[in-house]
Image 1 (cartoon, one colour):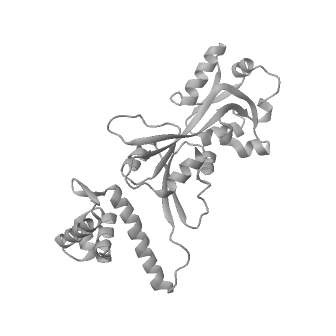
Image 2 (cartoon, rainbow, N blue to C red):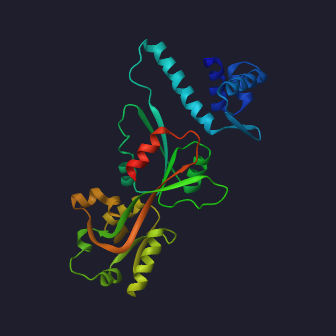
Image 3 (cartoon, one colour):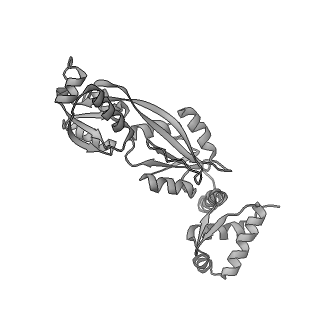
Length: 290
């Protein structure tokens, strides 16, 4: 049996409103009529599209996919009416969340295979780890990029994949990077811009200076790689960073990589959830990154 687009329109309205009463008012029909249309669509698809939490309706994974298609179908219909001809293919949405402090250069490198594709629309959202993982669990995101993977427990279905591992170096303006200075001396005598203590890089750095018997001069502790980059450019100190974060500055000579820090790396992760209907764009993207 063909899909009933009348049912689909009611579903789309409820999904965007998140509430049967508001949807019924917008559609100018009774709440029971809206409920029956939604049930008919769920029966046709054989899947639940909503789950109720208090008075609000939240999309299931199948509901999120159905909404993507519903939005695309009705957008194409509006375009047909307006222009009487369809231009190009419908774009497939890829919703990616990235930790607000994550390297922009890494994000760009990861997404480059799909950027500019005529059949793909990339929706990129930044935020805190809690915000992003909650959005991922609620099917509002397909993937979260992070350097801090979520803690695993029996109640979560997060799937963590290591995407890349970058070396970490001392990086600063050329005046702060004279050649021939031993590492221990450089760490002891030059002001440093460090990540905050809870980061994996900082833990590794603290272990390194402990082995060397060095007490570093800390000019700044920063949890944002973009801010570390700016402080390094200002000559505040030598930044402990993966070179990818300041790739353009290194290429132009604004900053110099003084030296690689031994046995110190930063890992980048892609986090997804176990889904019956994963976004088909993800498999190739994660495979290429891996």
